Image 1 (spheres, one colour):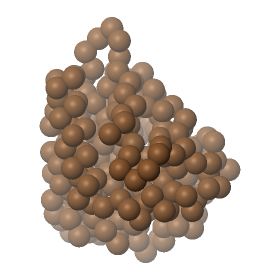
Image 2: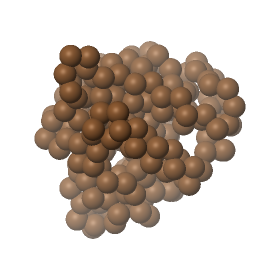
Image 3: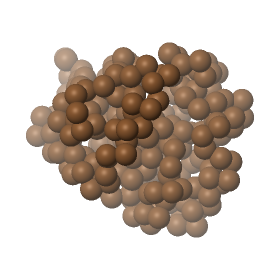
Length: 218
């Protein structure tokens, strides 16, 4: 499984973050986020989640169908097996495991970050506009053992307000340490400055929240 890894050169990382891609592959945006995470003193690793299903893709943001074809082949079983391998890599290479590891995902990766938090020992999990949480890993909510932060856009046409409220309610009912933040004027993909939906104010606020969240929990 190909991994894009960034780690501080002159010091031992004080934690690690697994970054989970959108359907567009391990593209420049994902690598940029990894480098931003590294600049905060963490090791960052971006696994190519589509590695089992053909050559590496880095689709344009208008090439949705190509990514959806890959998503249809990605099962929870194989994804979780890959996460075991990534967690093993972080432990063997950087000596980082358990509560020192966080996960950060976007869209498809946001859903998978929720799934990872519900099934693996972690220190923290962040989901940006995680699509399909209600239809998938929400049923595993009781398995979450780490703090979770979920960030959504109020104008997201792909994730309904009722889904966001269902997630909020399920986390509260399960008494999980969770925060759900909705940016009223933001659309889907608001964090990515390569997309037309980029919202600078929401992106900056969200990033500050993410850094504070990881600082407290990793």
